[in-house]
Length: 575
Image 1 (cartoon, rainbow, N blue to C red):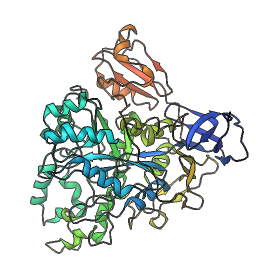
Image 2 (image 1 turned 30 degrees about the vertical axis):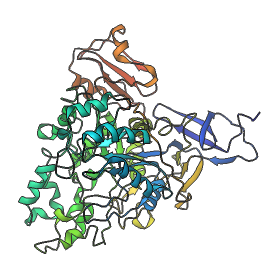
Image 3 (image 1 turned 180 degrees about the vertical axis):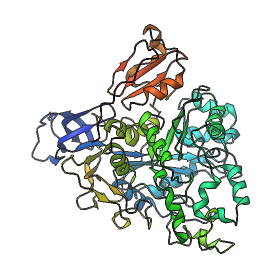
Image 4 (image 1 turned 30 degrees about the horizontal axis):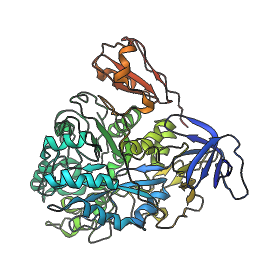
């Protein structure tokens, strides 16, 4: 009989951090899977030892919104599956979810299989796909989508508003959305309510074709807060309402919430019974001023939604990340080379007025960011005291893994999980690092974060028990082809508000609340604005008068609340 302590790898002297807790312990790994967590695990003669040197060991990052090897119109992506995933692994992301696009009038599965063929044998990290449905015919819905789910793809993307190229949420018949919500494999909407401003954006382009507002630095003007796909008041709420109207039980993941300010607005969030999750692209508001760079340099930062330069926008994003408004933190990696006539230079080539600053209408939308997503969240979030280490794991790994049917294989560190780890340095070993394009491993020829200083970068990245990246030498150790396709299942992420059939640890507040004697007569949005000030606590609304607090450490707390009640004090500090 083989010993239960016959490990391939043991990670020692680390502080293991999950979304629920953290503890100083060893991690025993066998065949690429976590076997045990414990103190002073025995090490055999053939076991590799990694010394975490007192640093933090977090789950490998899951970036659920990337565009790799996707060329649109005449534009050419800067990354293929080798360079894109090489960049991902070097920044601590061990799993990416990209997009397979159904062509209009074509079937879904051929698109999925063709995209799979591009990635197969080429990836440095594990991967999966969302399907972009452009033509939801009855055959597609009833025949193709079930095949897609059986293949291991359990999420779809539709645009916020319809066009001749892809449908909007309102274009999907209600019975189709309900059918998917009620089916054996309920689908998660990968981007129902996305960043395409549809007819309004096209109108803006026609109106501003050749004037000053066509410059890259004026991109923000075509998508003001009240028109952008952002969580706010007025017309900005339209994507949320449309996502719900598309099917009362169809869950939607609202991606690309690039606005700040009132990002945490909870009002109206409980309308209907569909759950809507928020995904914020990596720290975009902090770099809005770069669109005003001299000459054509501003084109490097043309993306949708546009960057913001107001400090209040940045504060609003961090508030949303901290208080639970945003569910996942993605890169929305969509790279186009700057020095490429089929990249950003299209904005200079297709420039009717020959303006030396180019024309943003014809500049491909998108930024590289898969390398920097995890380090930015760790440095700007955890190390500056904006979020806890547990909240970092939620945003960086576990929520995306749960939302898209990969948990607990991905997104956590527990027996049975893939041995995907990111090891950060201890407080005493950290040294500031300046982000430089020449040091990054993606395929793009620039980074929008050039010159930005971070307080730490992953020291080691481990993919299924093997060292994939060494931060000391800035070397990607794993070969292309190391990445595997992840066949995804059902989502296990509870809805942030309203009813859900999936609850962690078997606790269902809808069934159990009546016996708990909880009463609160304050409006639900006051709960959200006060309770969610503390990143250690999340709220689940059971009814108009009952809300249950779920502590992030795996327990829940309930009591009668009054207007004088204050949230639990934060238990995390600036480190």
